[in-house]
Length: 113
Image (cartoon, rainbow, N blue to C red; front, side, top):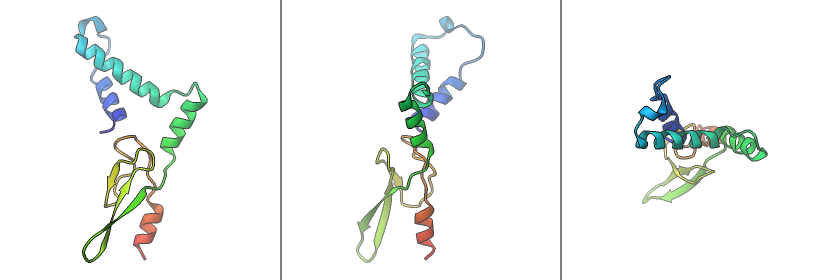
């Protein structure tokens, strides 16, 4: 679960119409952090906010790394934005760490050859 999904899940737990003063300090802190995280994602009041949102939504090709094996070559794929490992099986449509959309078109096309 990436940080945006976690923030959204945190906010879904809050019941409607209950005053924040009834929550513990830890819950209030967690809710505040969730709002800050989601605000970062949807801050469209600045050009940087638009650019940040568009850069995540528009799919990018993963970075392909060759791993030499004894008899064959194997590959792993990394996120083009945060460089975290996406795995070896071309399954993720987005990076679980940063939320970057992933485009596997060229890799899948190459796999059919």
